Image (cartoon, rainbow, N blue to C red):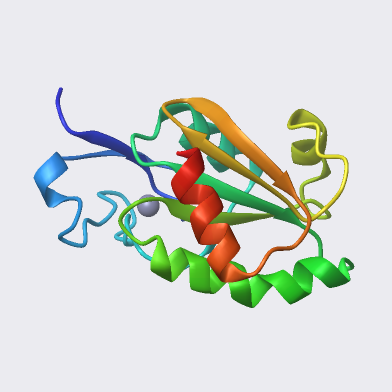
Length: 143
Ligand code: ZN
């Protein structure tokens, strides 16, 4: 099988997309969600682990929680960064209050923490809120 592996961030299905179709708005074969959407998806631990391990497109996760002020402040910056990084990386959020086992699994000590995954490995991690421009350059350097 050839093509790029991409986990659907809505339903968790692993899709294969021909490399030359990545820029053509590929959709999940199971649920129809856009696979390269610049929208920030909320993921659970299972989807995060699948995407972090298998995806051929870099994945950046923002570990956050609703009670965390700096997390809420960073949310629009993260959203903007996702637009700017569209096509290069997919940006997702994981709510550590709803999914406390994810914070343990990834050893998250403080939030917000962002982790960048590429090629099945964690490439970089960054704690503390950042403006969109810094998120964009950090991701570009990391993946
Ligand atoms: Zn899907």
